[in-house]
Image 1 (cartoon, helix red, strand yellow):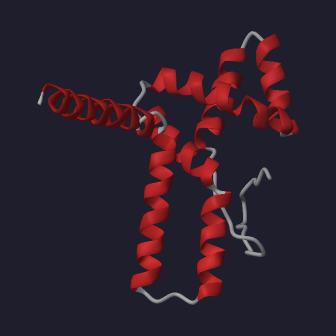
Image 2 (cartoon, rainbow, N blue to C red; image 1 turned 180 degrees about the horizontal axis):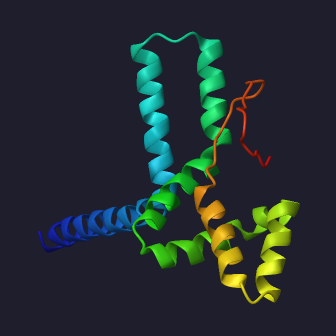
Length: 152
């Protein structure tokens, strides 16, 4: 009887420990969990709406290809919760790579560092940087509109 009780207690303890470890591991990456939730919803939608298999494949490929863009969208919501000054600093740091690749903005940024009116120039680049949006397009999709700068 003692041995049986010890085996039952050990089994329950092992199940609890295993459950806790699995729970911790599953909560480690919230981005992956959010992505899997989106993919599950996509699969439910495709089943409910009886989408053809060719389009299902294209939809899954689109979402798999844009996993990083979805993460960036979640990051944008965090940035929107910051104060305006902090938003500008963070956005400039995040978009500096893109800004330096656009010669017009890069020259303004360079002028801002060496000018007595540099804060105005810098403010302009911050405003432009804050208005930058990311957009995802499927392969072979036509996009574009007048008066817009696209950085690919």
